[in-house]
Length: 393
Image 1: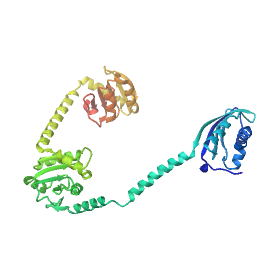
Image 2: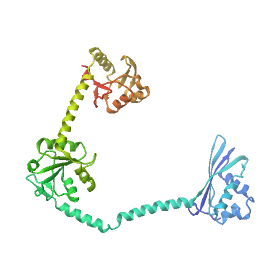
Image 3: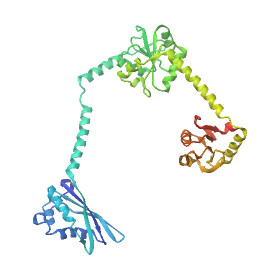
């Protein structure tokens, strides 16, 4: 008997079957052939279609549970669309399988060619991408690469510390000071030759000397390290301007456009000094205010200290109301979820563990005013005081 594999089929019929009793696969296959025989005429007789290879092997997957059987029927077809739909509809005329009542419902008719076309499109995209990645670069790319190589060869060592620098440091009135060799290479690649690197966190004597006779622009990364270098430069050298890479980016990875934009946005060093001074003053006032807010009466401190002693070794937490009475005790592992569910009911938390940033954030959102732990890995906020066992002694 001729067979048709699913890979050569144009359509696949998927049908669900439900049987009021227990039957086997051969019973289902027999019912399909038997109850559709003569129904569709000789041209669409299932047995003949299967012999000629236009209908493939009928797959039946069933399982029995609670005295009833259900499963799926899968039939591959190389007939045209209309003929395949007729065969599918004929399956739904089956009413009995063996001695049992049965119902067959066609779930879908899958067009195999659609899936193949989708595969072809996706594979073609992959092949095109591989081809574009591996083809020879165009003339502009070659020219850019050669120019970049020439500029990178221009890097030299400057001063007694042998600092990485461009070739125009001596002849230029303005000099750009960057953090490291990679920053110098990137600026050289984009045409900036009056650049020199600190080559470390401490400021070399060569940079200090240059700052007395040239206009210096400090160009640093957009991160915490860049802020520290600016602070160091301002304290030991005569810096005129400060430029920063975009937040989170390093000078060595900037494009030409980003470099020009950052240098155009440079600010006077005096302005940076004023901003730093204002920031320090703000921090001192905030710290002073925080310290004042943390002042508690001795009786309240003793109460909190006693609660902490009760909790030692339990990995638990007390939840307190506005009168600082205990609402309940929970494991620390459930603290965050409990605070989220209770909302503003909890006024204070005493816990056998460290106050973390995550716990503080949840406490703030839940309206908790005081967090007390054995120690703290975060600072207090304006909305929630953080105390440790040392604060209660």
